[in-house]
Length: 161
Image (cartoon, rainbow, N blue to C red; front, side, top):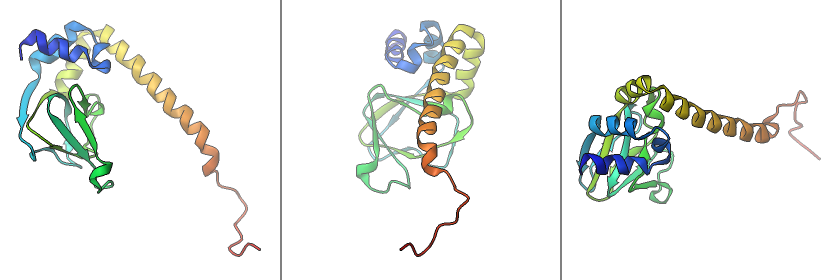
């Protein structure tokens, strides 16, 4: 894929779009294109995550040991960003990623992503705003369910009548 095509492709991904074309150009230049055959494992659950992957073509199945049924797996297809959190913070892979078919992904290392943001304060501010909104949304959802988990001082009667 030509550089301009990669930039256009990355620009279609909402979280990357907000960064602007110059940042996307740097990411496209610095990213590594990886081809995986059907059945190949891209990464394993529990491994340290050092960046994200964008699915350029094909399909990648993400399955956690907590979700042993194939029907509970997530399928990442064209344009999906896998490991968004790993672009920003040290974390571990929450699932194993396996190619369902011959696929190509673009690997964006965290070090490149963060270095690029350091040089582009406007992009960093835009990303911070999106992350803040997401965190606020999660906190609002937790406020809604928190009363369901409230512990009372009264012990429960094990033999209610």
